[in-house]
Amino acid sequence: MKTKTKTTEQKEIGRIALSDEQDLVASIIDKEKLDLRVYMSSDSYRGPTKRGVRFYMFDENWPAFKRLIDKIDKEYQQL
Image (cartoon, rainbow, N blue to C red; front, side, top):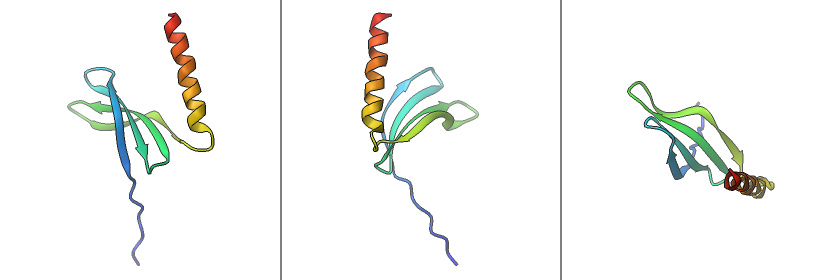
């Protein structure tokens, strides 16, 4: 009996270099989740790490996240 496996669709939106070996990558997963994850690029490992967050963009999560980013930006502007 064959088992059906679901293919995950991942679209990278953008990335920010955190260091020579690390990037913060923003991706949309299956057109419903936002994934913000640290990716490594070193001699021993190349790919995503456990450091990150993924959440559904629906159920008011996206507007709440945008408000949080606005609050963070206001704090940043005052530094």
